Length: 136
Figure 1 (cartoon, rainbow, N blue to C red):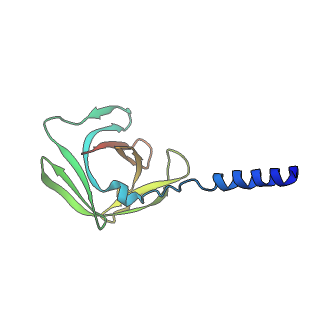
Figure 2 (figure 1 turned 180 degrees about the vertical axis):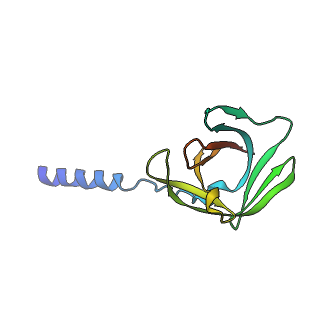
Figure 3 (figure 1 turned 120 degrees about the vertical axis):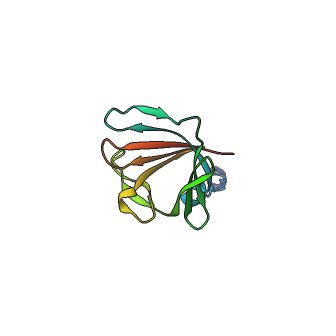
């Protein structure tokens, strides 16, 4: 009788444990969609962080179809396509998300996305890192 009780308890416990909701995470290209406001740049030889010039609103907009726009005060400075992939990061020593703009391999940047903050970092020593916040 104890064996049956213990077996039923174990089966019930395992059934409940396997009923957790599965969370489906959005693909990176979907997470990037929207407009991001430039907030500053850090890095280089000094590692200094420079805040964005408040007199100019710079944005980076990711659109459907792997397209992007860079704007300054609503004037398009650059537009084109981007590709997402995985590259060995100098920051963590393993593969990380990366982006290439307009198919130019030298434009490859490591992507860090935390909540509403986006960072695009050069993947070489003494490079720079641009910071953005999602516009609502």
